[in-house]
Figure 1: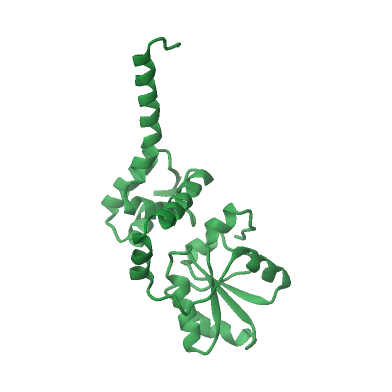
Figure 2: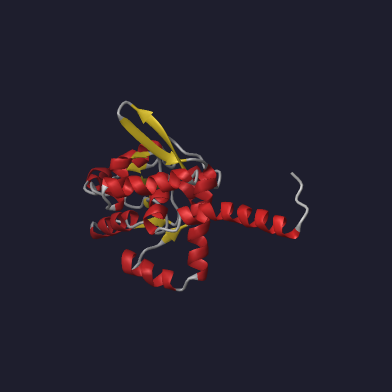
Amino acid sequence: MTLTTTSERREAKDDLFEGFAIIAQALASGRRVEIVEVLAQGERTVEEIAEVIGQSVANTSHHLRTLARAGLVSTRREGTHIHYRVSSDGVVDVWLGIRRLATDQLHAIEELARNYLGDRDGLEVVGRSELEDRLRRGDLVLIDVRPEVEYAAGHLPGAISIPPDRLGRLDEVLPTIPEEGDIVAYCRGPYCVFADDAIRYLGRRGRHAVRLIDGVPEWRRGGGLIET
């Protein structure tokens, strides 16, 4: 169909941009953005997602339907369970872009992050390129401080699983790590507290550890290898 009048073109353009806005509207909720962050780690059932984000199953189902209508999540049925996942890598890219833009443009994010994460001044970080070099040399121990289901869905090469609710496992691992050996911890990304907790736990035991500044989604989207 060829549009001939200015008003027809204006109406068609309005419709087009309303279509673009569907994505923004679906993500106009902190809970739904958090769901995307969780699903960026790997697929989950509605019950699991509800537990992670601290919402009822009913509320979580409502959020998931909104995300699904916008094409941001898809499902897989296994018996009586429905597993949700991000529908494409593009969804992860959008989430990472939103987070980066908010960090760059909103001064409040720094304070909000500090209120949640606490004082990070004493925590050292390592970037991806340095970690890749160290992994090739094999002179560090890498620990994945996410729930086991997320570790199983995909983790950095050679990482040891230390779930956030089982930091005591570190006491079993430490005797196998030379005193001078470096430890790098990571979790869901830069605004995740799990790795911080593990580093502080290790510090109380006289062991030095640093935090990978990113998480698995950033590592994967940057072309890094993922093990399952």
